[in-house]
Length: 174
Image 1 (cartoon, one colour):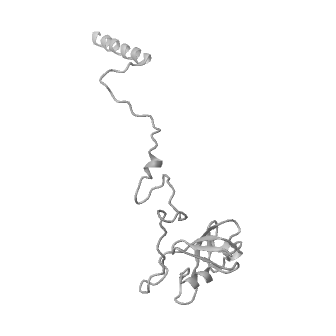
Image 2 (cartoon, one colour; image 1 turned 180 degrees about the vertical axis):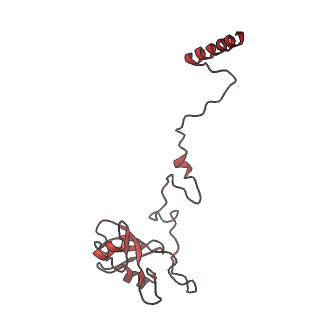
Image 3 (cartoon, helix red, strand yellow; image 1 turned 90 degrees about the vertical axis):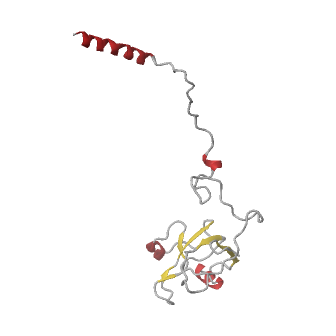
């Protein structure tokens, strides 16, 4: 039986293959429809699905017209065929209703199977300019510091510098 993980809600459930993502989400109390008209079911069912190729039904003609490509699918049209992770839209319920059911987030410190953010150069709240372990590798050549000693000039620069005072003297004598 395929295992479906709703990532935003921290919920995992095993379901029989061939069911719609929206049906499974409704059973768990997870809203997947941004309704255009209250209590009609008419609206935007956009979800994002990650899994092995063939974990959901192929995109239909209607889904292609609506813009489903890549991870983006429509929960009322996509059928579950294999293990997958599903990301839902945020803030779908009315603000006056009770909040959506959310399990405690997994802690990688206690659960070794919990997903952990990889160490990369992407900015986060903790490291806005990227993780220092990934960004500052120390591969750049250090900037030389002056020690008060003049650096030797290039040969072409000496010739040009020597020629300039002679030209100035010749103008003054005239």
